[in-house]
Length: 299
Image 1 (cartoon, rainbow, N blue to C red):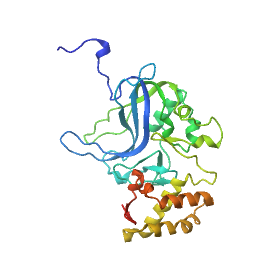
Image 2 (cartoon, one colour):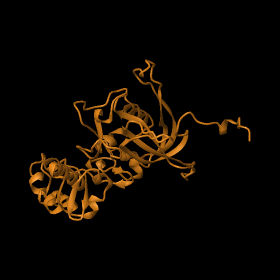
Image 3 (cartoon, helix red, strand yellow):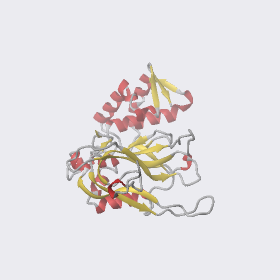
Image 4 (tube, rainbow, N blue to C red):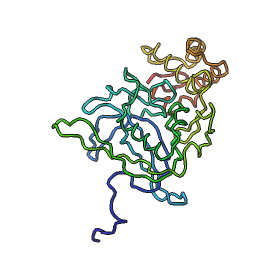
């Protein structure tokens, strides 16, 4: 059959086609592309957003596509270990820079503590703000990008000009990023996040409602458990692992040194998590350690 010349059949200039979409996933992650020949390219840290095409009534009309164009590192020609940022599963808890690491927070892991004004995440955030997304709610949620899940609106092609040149000395081509031209439904409204107050910090990551950070600043019990497990691993890395009971016994000693110190009930909840099988089955936790019988083996 000849190629259609109808405008409605024309291909789009970027991966996510223009039109109505719903965000079904939103997280920072370490991703790696592999081409059809099996060649793998250098991994990178990016804000991966899953867009699902919908019609005017909100019915799904196509397959979800994940966009990986909002990258934050490493720089062109550098390896992943040079990235200045990493995904985090809890505030202040960056994950190892490994393919598959993912979480709703972006954590600095170098002396660079922020993103530049012309960076892709900031340009994307500006487009969200112009489309009436309340950026203050994102700030109240400690920048948990899971708040974007459930957002619906009209997608267009945002062009981001890239600075610098490639190895041949040619100017980098502009990056085309899917972004919202208009929004008819906000993710934080779909998730039922309160309009004001400290409770607005309770975001939603990857489709699951996250507990609101506590007043003492340690986040939730899961985040505290991850923080304690990380501390245990750093202190005992050379052992390669340790009995689960010993990990649990470290809770009080480590929690007592945290500033601010977690509330007793939060500490006990984290202790219960570290003693449970389900905690070690969390894909994010598996990047740190895995449970082998009654032994916690460090990743």
